[in-house]
Image (cartoon, rainbow, N blue to C red; front, side, top):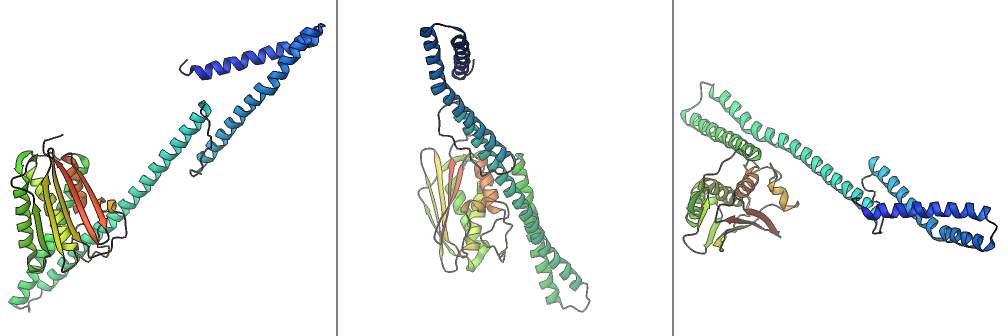
Length: 338
């Protein structure tokens, strides 16, 4: 009764078929020419209209079965062609949608497996490189004939490599916590404009003279919002740091901050030093880096951490690439939405 049209159609076909059987029997046993003519006329109409209709439905049903069989055997590119508007067409559409969903799930699984492989490869590389340097420099320090100046230089290198490992491990723990949903936000009423200017000043200090020039365009002071100040600081720190590391030498970094009634609007723009020959969305994947040769220092987790923090706040992030221009755009809610 949930599909009354199909039920009604089946009942009518059964009745008409039963009547056709009675007419054939009556035509064979009745001697009245008039009655025989009526019975034969009904049988002719049944054969001319209902039988082709039933055969058409049966043919489409068999086509759906054969198409489903091909899909079940692994040919997920196969599509069941059916342009009608009845229940058989709906069935074909449902199977095609199931196939599309399965294909999407399969592609996502393959992508996930690829990312796992890349993660293992990249984290092994990024941990092994400083670890090997630490082991080598420790072996060198064991020698007794080193000068004080050489020893100090080796210790500075050890300190730098150890800090590199520390930062990578901290990033791994942080992205793991965010992925598991165990991070709690400490929401405060913060001045985002002041937070950004402080992050820019600190990044200029840490990068020194070699850093590309930063031009900030902050619409007004203050720009207040209910956010986790420490987490948003990390967002600004990662985005500015990425722009400084991956910008073409001699170019400028532009940072814009504005607001609407409900949102804080942030944008950072730089000219990339490396050709980006993959989809912008892939930069949100773990261990994806614009520098595929991995000559610059970085965990490859920065953009993934940024995306996780923004989404925890109920905000949006997107990347736009126009030739060599690389733009990251953030929309953060002023009021807590979660």
